[in-house]
Length: 191
DNA sequence: GTTCCGATGTACT
DNA sequence: GTACATCGGAACG
Image 1 (cartoon, protein in one colour):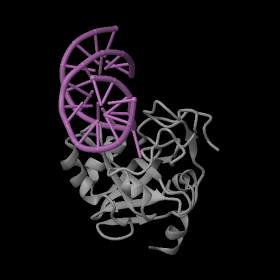
Image 2 (cartoon, rainbow, N blue to C red):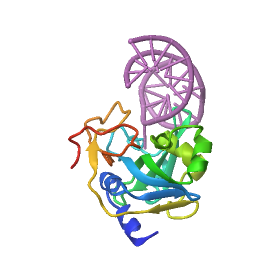
Image 3 (cartoon, helix red, strand yellow):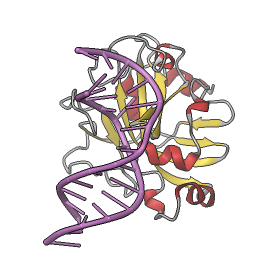
Image 4 (tube, rainbow, N blue to C red):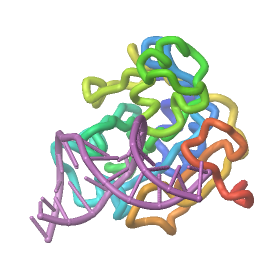
């Protein structure tokens, strides 16, 4: 793992989630720029890790810098980056990318949709990048994955999406002005 | 543009 | 049995 990435993923989930905005993510060369993330940890009632380890969430309690891939609603896959060396059960959900590399392959996997909808949502980006449970637990700095940080940037913050619990925790991060988000941020959300 | 609904793996009551 | 970190399509305006 690149030294800067190795250092960053040891930190807390909200810090990692904010720092990943602007990073490039590829699987077998197909991917883009991360523009939306959410943080989860074991003290968070919205997190899969809240009730302790299970067979499904086991990667969240394993080494940092690896993928936690799970099926949602029985249909879609979601990709997380395991983080926080001090608090097992922490991870960052990747919610949206700006598609950059392998657009043709993404289109073929997703069907005929507009470019900005290719990776605008956690299930959509997994479909576009070909991410399935087969990648669960894999290292993110090793093939087929490639993850590279970019310079820190100002990010928008807001409540996480689709939750029943933890809705007052502002652990959603993103590029507020981007057209590729799964949902917009409220106007006064830049920190 | 909006709302409603069905698909169905995994964890839990 | 119910809930869930979702999506796409149908119906509607």
